[in-house]
Amino acid sequence: MTQAAQSTVMHVRCPERLPEEAYRHVLELLADLSLVVQALPPSAALVELKGALRYHDADARHLGEMLRVRCVSRLGIDVRVGIGPTITIAATASAQIADPGGVLAIAPEQVTEWLGPLPVEALHGIGPRQAAVLRDYGIHSIGLLAAVSPSTVQRLLGKKAGRLAADRARGIDPRPVVPRALPVSASVRHRFSDHTLDGAVVRAALLDLVVRLGLLLRRRGQAAQALTLTLRFAGGASWEKTRRLPEASAHDEDLRTLAYQLMDAAGLQRARLTGIILKGEDLLDADQVAQQISLDQARESRLIAEGAMDRIRRKFGPDAINPAAVAPFHRAS
Image 1: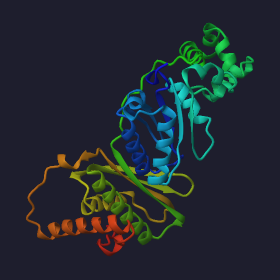
Image 2 (image 1 turned 135 degrees about the vertical axis):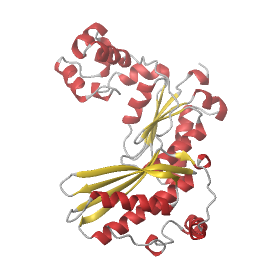
Image 3 (image 1 turned 180 degrees about the vertical axis):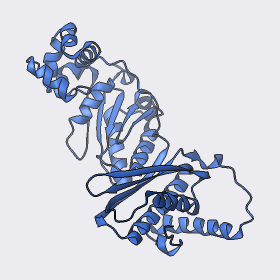
């Protein structure tokens, strides 16, 4: 069997609750391995390896190990990598790997023997309710599911769900990996260690988020056309509002003005906050944003200073400059 005919699909599981920025970096590492990467937000991805095997002159397991090493060395995170001839086999394999990470590659000739002993709920695509129904009828393993006639499985789970479950238990899954990038948004968040009532503390946290979001957008070469502010309250309630910027921007000054307007719109008085999320929406490539000639010398000076501060943060870290030291404090109207 030739190398190109072996396992070609890679399913990557990142740690749960991985920040969006780190997840994007993982996707960038995957793009270095293959041209066909399908993002599965918030923390997984699919990769078609068939062409990559020839390009890198390596087997699939070696590419999986290469990805793990790069993720650990460059991002400080580990990943679980499942590899198989179909999306279902690869995703089932990645779920069988214990945290924090590892690589499990299933060759086409190993599929039946490997799947058979696994519990039926381990098959990717089988939900808890479906697994419970199958177990009620004595179908406890994927091997038993594969042995049952597809018509019987369809009667138990429904026509479409039953057909898919019967096929996938036999290793049949014709779905291709479809290239798909992460949705065009970027978010940063702050979680308060205690329930917070102090307006000054909240504004300081919001200002920090503005600076972090602006730095993230500029580093990616993107600009936001809208901002969404989400406030989390004690007790589990939340408030969210979106407003569009007058013009797409990644500059702290523009983002800060709109973020403060959103905070004012919340009308907070004695609300106890537990967290804030600020998200840039409808992102554009920065080179698509029209550059207007400005007669505002003060703004031009601030933009020059912003560029200098970006270089300082890149060299000495994001905390090298305190946001409160370089931006005006805004009082709620």
